[in-house]
Amino acid sequence: MRRWWVWAVATVCLGVSLGAGWYALPHGKPQACVDPLGCVAIAPDGPVRLGVIQALTGKVAPLGLEQLRGLELALDKHGGKILGHPVELVIEDTGCRPEGGANAALRIVSDPSVVAIFGTTCSGDAAAAAQVMTEAGLCMISGNNSAPFLTSIGGKRAPKWQPGYFRTASNEEHSGPAAARYAYEVLGARSAAMIHDGDIYTQGLAAGFRSEFERLGGRTALFAAVDKGDADMRPVLEAVVASKAELVFFPLFQPEGNNVLLAARAMPEMAPLTLMSDGALIESTFIDAVGDASKGMYFVGPAPPAFSPAVDELQKMYRTKYLSDPLTSYYMSAFDAAGILFAALERTAVKGTDGSCIIGRQALRNALLATKDYPGVGGLLQCDEFGDCATPKFNVLRMQDPSLGVVGLAANVVYTYSPR
Image 1 (cartoon, one colour):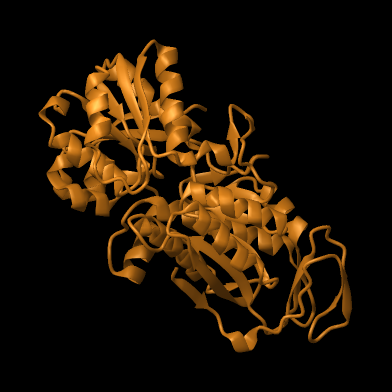
Image 2 (cartoon, helix red, strand yellow; image 1 turned 30 degrees about the vertical axis):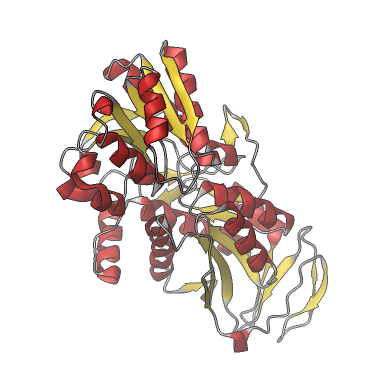
């Protein structure tokens, strides 16, 4: 597994304690940590060290890269400093695998000078990483995780919820229902097949679609799983044909999503069926890989922020720094996630007259939880008791011209759903 360590070993001399007790700052008197989860002490000339857990290799790497870029842009907006201190990033790659999330989190929490974690890209990684993070007393905030299982379902604590976990991506508890409503009410589908890969993200979206589709009166013709890494999707699609489904909802990542689409286009018996996926495939590398095979396909994903001066400014910052257009709009939610974390650190830190800082770990959790009316790129954000900080709103998009890429796809909104 690749690992990036963006920090200088020679500077790691920060007098830090994981638990409550006495510790000494390099240029100050002994201080008592009264925070129940312990404290991080930052020396007058020391850095603020942030853990970063993202998927930076494999087919999902473009999404992880956009998360990292959103964080970097937020740091640039703050002049590269938090609390007046330079920032060092301890970056770990998960490869979008749950075990990768756990291992990355274990490596990061083993360093007691890390104040918080920015991540992850994939929801399966987050479930594993969040448990490690919670047990170590840290906080973690993501701009990309969206599986309902991580925060709340139906207004109640979800199975994978962990204290200290927050996100600015919309809870996709509402994504499946948005797709189901469009399928039933607009497209007129009365039977549908759902395909997932067993991941908490894909399975959760498929289950959400099924529940709402059946509530509306539709019939679930097939609810099937493929394995991650499967290349031959013909068997599951043959089962779809045999089920008499009119529509297929497959909220999969790459390469499995690509494989389903390309296999479907190669089967004449699949031609009458409507194909629909989710936000994981609203991404330039997917469109480039499948080309015209994506014509006529539908996608459901979080509605990006409406154009505004803040959006325009951030887009200009992105193009100036990276000399390219964004691959997705998800760097914006990453930018907001980083901004919320920075603001919480500013509210939490106890600053010494010599420039030193003390950050209580529980105090930081409390500050994140108290986030209200934060000026995000697309509007005000507020974190609820489960860690959701965004107001959910989802668009259904239809691909007309793959040559226009993500920009063209995002412009072709055929349906918008907001539960609030």
